[in-house]
Picture 1 (tube, rainbow, N blue to C red):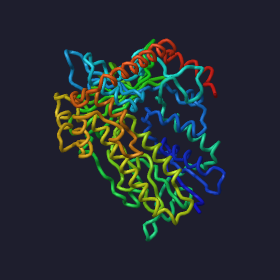
Picture 2 (spheres, rainbow, N blue to C red):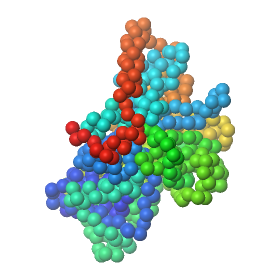
Picture 3 (cartoon, rainbow, N blue to C red):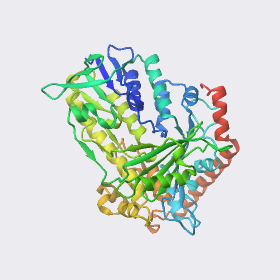
Picture 4 (cartoon, rainbow, N blue to C red):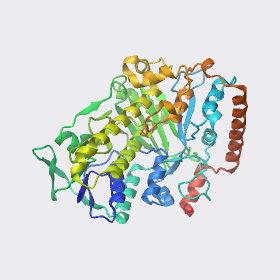
Length: 506
């Protein structure tokens, strides 16, 4: 029986793992303990999430109102992509990837392809982009926790979020905690971790969770599990990050802004109390000085007056996430640039999967771990495909960065095959066979048709009867849009009310 699990490293990944494992083993004889250094700061810029985070927080038993107040949360309903295509008629290209889901209505996609006016795709199939346009919230103050009129996620303060997760794990889930510095990972002859040596003494466990960041001190350095680099697919390897105060009377957008640049893109995430802004770029296509200048131009403020952090990004993943008696989670396991909030998403999914599939006896590790590894590797490759999609179907030709992203040699075969298929037919859920395709058909549709992917219209004609049915569906969407506009509250106003009154329990 597993008597003890030790998580090495804190931060968001470590405390997500602690909560998932603490929830699984609460009240049992299995001890879950997290040790972290008080001297190593976390990266702390993962401030965007996806809707799955709502499910996770509700599962943990965290009060949504307290979470919103303590982590300076603002609602996120999707992403606004700006400048990812070449300007048209002097206008900057913009489209939304909202959290509306509609994949059961293939006819709706075909109706959009067949329309003459070419309404923006997100506006055609749902109403959430309209809420974003008007800075409206996805829920009402009267709606219960984790429920909304539209699907939503959060913008949050990563440091405060880690602290919230920490306090919940310790106070509600029986997780143990210790501040100590890791000095040595002692290995057995058979390749297992024998024990850890910290400045507080020896730490021995049945299972070790490596949450030591990019250094991957256990799985990577001690166990020598190789890193699989993906910089030949996704070129961005650097980031500049800064926190910016709101201007007077500035609205709080209910979406992330992602604005493409000459060799990367800028994220703009609005929290309740400030904005987190950063420039992700390829050091092989631009200099840090040029990236700094683009970020400064975007913000419109002298960056020398702000605290700008430089972050090196290692894009790729470990060839095995689980080896012997050690599992890597978070940056120790892998990383893909923060477009579409991939970091927290994969960290959460893999921590949950480990907690739910972990056998109670060590003898089963060698049987269970290969399946876990296959699933995680497949997940990373699918995430990489989806992020690459944003770059490789762009028509921008103003820099080598955008031209290189369209080079077929940089596009994974799995994505090339789908793109070829989608020239002739609209994507359906049959094109996504894996249960752990964390980005599914809806996500692809928003990006593909937000970026005007040229699916052949003649191959996607719909019958008169289907046209009439879709007309009724579209009328329903228009009605929902009108209702949402009438009922929805200003995003900032709702957040202020929640900070004062909390969120209804049920």
